[in-house]
Image (cartoon, rainbow, N blue to C red; front, top):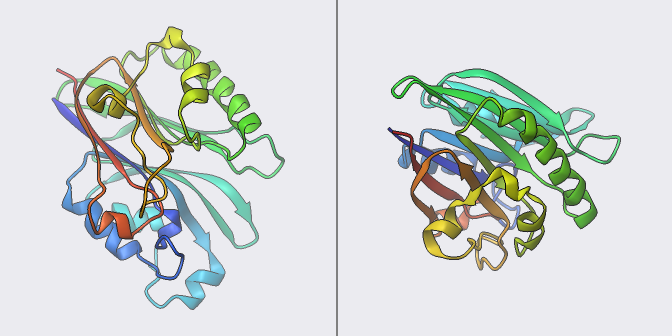
Length: 249
């Protein structure tokens, strides 16, 4: 069985320059590639001021709007909460979750970062894949603590699952910190690096220079990993999405 997975920071549904609300175009693009699992970051769950002022703001949450009729199963974790607004990570799946949890890894009192982890069951091959959707902090000291928490979480998770995917916005420009601190004993590979010999440059979308977005995996065979850089992808969010395909046979 081939499992396709995409990771994408959607910039709260706004274009790179924040001038245009492009969530409808993002939905069209996601549907055009027919991917099985979608890992999204910076997804708005509620924003009363914007929903009142933008005419084509969806009646449902952003993740429900994007998932509608295509990805019947989804999980959402609030990362940033304020009066009348919150946003976070969302995982959309064509396959059912057997369990999911949102783990706060913010060093600050107001939760702003988390690991959204879900176990997704694939009936075609009778396997469960453990998937972690994350958005790490902007500062090195944050990411160091968050990667330590990720390693701690993996210690228990890997006892139950051989097939594991970690994807999202790592906010680590070069990749050195993640490569150093993601425990080598876990034997993860980075998908784009394995497929193309280098990490993917995904930020900023118009002229991508920084390797912010990654997909790490173990317990399955990588078929391919690509960067969706051509228009209109490069004209939507400030990040470029990554699309990977895995063989679980």
